[in-house]
Amino acid sequence: MMLWRTRTAFLGVFTALALIFSYVETLIPISLGIPGAKLGLANLVIVTALYKMRLQEVYVLSVVRVVLSGLIFGNYISILYSLAGGLLSLTVMAALKKGDRFSVTGISVAGGVFHNIGQLLIAMFIVETFSISYYIPGLLAAGTVTGLMIGILSGQMLKRLVNIQF
Amino acid sequence: MNTGIKKNDILLIFIVLAVAGLAYFLHSVIGAGGAGSVTVKVNGVIEGVYNLGEDQEIVINEGTNYLVIKNGKADMTKADCPDKLCVNQKAVSKKHESIICLPNKVIVEVNSGEKGEYDAVAN
Ligand SMILES: [Zn+2]
Image (cartoon, rainbow over all chains, first blue to last red; front, side, top):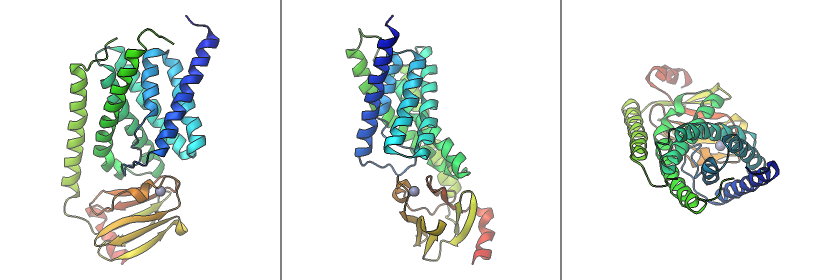
């Protein structure tokens, strides 16, 4: 096992990478017109980390990523929003990964879908309404498409990182 | 480790899309027929109910958001929020559709049948 200091350094590198992806995402002017639906490029780092790091480290990575990118590119509402999506998504992905019945693509699709569902739930809570449930079809479809893309990319990354375990 | 797609992955995608399709179907069935009015809420408090049949421009929350009603549809045209998600959303006209502006806590909902009585009061 690697030294604690080395592990921390890797965590830092992964966090920086996730932040860069968050930044790139703010440059891409794609709006699906649905609150909460994003490309989720940073999820590429989270999915890859899920296979390469200890679970508690991935949680740390996920939370630090959301808080930092929220402070830099967003506001406190967007932190709350992304945190709900990020944590629900990670929890579902970790649970599905345990049984080894899904490939990284399936895990990533579940992650994308639950990321959007987590954000929708928080939105319902903040604006105190259930009527935004009408976004569900769009969010599920968007989550599937982005999850598929991220899953395929993560699969390629993991193939190249096959001998490395952080 | 295995990076290839498994049968369970396909099944998962199929289920998610089936749920999405079902939700869409339910929404279009429930929302069919259109509706008469929209309710504007700020911070969970109703600010006003407006008739969709009447073309008008509505200033919401002392000017943080602007709603335009035209040809039976309500569209958020301006907002001072940082994400502009509300402005990018499509115009709404069917029952249960809504436009939300999360940063400003503004929500515009198309009223369901029972709330139709509001129209008489508002007009
Ligand atoms: Zn807005």
